[in-house]
Length: 122
Image (cartoon, rainbow, N blue to C red; front, side):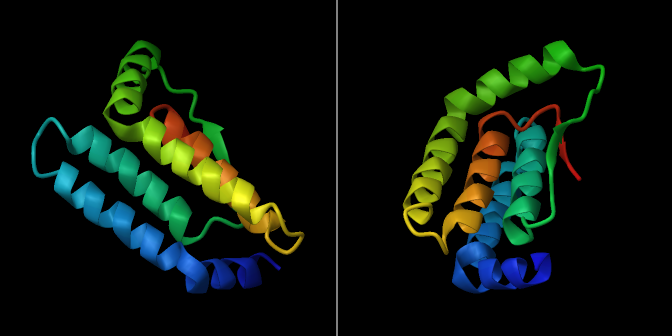
């Protein structure tokens, strides 16, 4: 069932979304300052490519203060807009019963898009 959900996700916009995140990641990695943000965007691109069956969990690393500072910078520099876009699409998809599983994936991506530092995908 996860495979079918992922294939449908790819056909109906997941591939385009993942490519958008990939291009954004490459553009962020042009500068040295943008490299950490580019890696987090790659994390979101991976989830956007194949979301069914993946979990977003706290990585439990020892970089708590640094993760907090980077998450605040991320939210200020565009993470809030990305999160709101995923929330919007999640709400729209949850209007129909068929769209609920896809809306839940957008909600998962919204949580990662808001604070990606200190989280990992399983």
